[in-house]
Image (cartoon, rainbow, N blue to C red):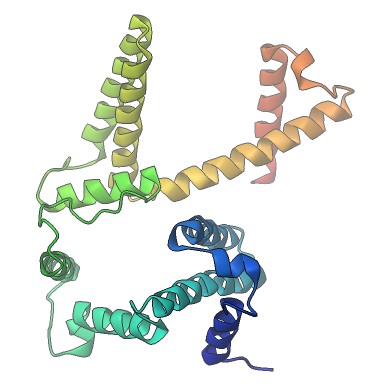
Length: 266
C-alpha cells in the first residue's frame, strides 16, 4: 500500500490531538524535539556510512517525521504549516539556482560559488542579521563541522593558507603550545590550546579536500573495529581482562591486529 504525505500529516495531527492523541507526543515542545532531530540526522549519516540502504530508507522516514512534527507544532501556534515549509524551500532553491531555473550563465564553478555566497549574504541582510562574514554559521553545529564552515567563510575573503603546507606547520606550532601549557599546569590554558590544535587540524583536512567530520567518524569506526578485534584476539589467547596486561603487551597485540588488517586489505 502506497502512503502519501497527506496521510503522514494526518497521523501527526492525530498524535497531537489534545483529547485523543498520544500523551508523549502531546507534551513535546520545540526544545524537547530538537535533540531527537539531531539524533535522527546522525542515524541517517550512520546508515550512509555503513552503506545500509534498507536502513537508510527507514532513517530518512524518521527524519521526515521530525519535519512533520515541527510543521504540526507550527500550525498549532499559527506560525507556519507543512505547505509553508515546502513553499519556502522551493522558492529558496530556485532563487539560489538561477543558472538552472532562469537565464543566468556562470563561466565556471568559482563564479557559481561566488554567486551562491552573494545570494546567501543578501538573504541574511533581508532577515536583519548583521552581515558580518561569519554571521549565520549555526552555533549548534558539531564543532568540527562549524570549524570547517567558519574557515570556508574566512577563506572566501582571502584569509587562508595557499595550500595545506602552512596549515600543517600551524598544527605543529599549536601542538608545541599544548606542550607548553601542560608543562605550566594550567588546565584552562591547556583546554584553549587543545581547541586551537583541533581547529588547525580541521584547516589541514579542508585544504586537503577532506571532510573533517567524516574523517573523524571513520577514524572512530576504525578504532572501534580494531579494539573489538583486539579483545577477540586476546580472549583467544586466554586473556579475558585487558586491565591485567601491560601497555607493552597491549601495544604488541594492537600491532598484530593492524598487520592482519594490512594483509586482508581492510
